[in-house]
Length: 181
Image 1 (cartoon, rainbow, N blue to C red):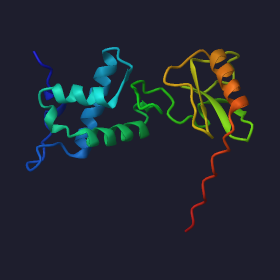
Image 2: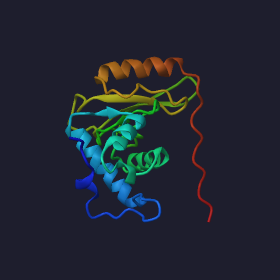
Image 3: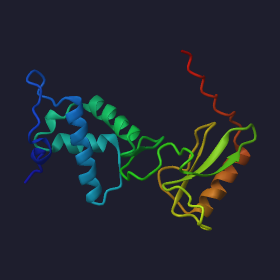
């Protein structure tokens, strides 16, 4: 028996002309599908795999095309529902850091020309911890290099980040220009 979207789209009315859900409804359905996928123990996928999954579901045609899916995935990443890696993979763990930020940056190293290599974790580092509270990733703010999609032990990430900082010749990212009223 094929799975259906009935449980997710019941009560939602597709557009009469296109037969597709409006953007907000499609986003809501996507979030529910991602949660169901996570519940199955799947932590990583690609947009192509998600599109194939949705297309093969009964009622999947109301969702929209590949462009709609990519737009909704970027929105989900902005809302920290998922993490989209530089390689285009989708991490379904909602606690995976997407852009670091001060609350998740555990340490910063400087490259040869001044860019920063950040070691980040999914959780803020509590003041009372002597050891890392969980796995980590690293990323360079200059060349946009990173450790990939899999979180690793802090010692391994520190070694990789240090090696990258020593070898990277990228300049620091340009500062954001102030808003002019």
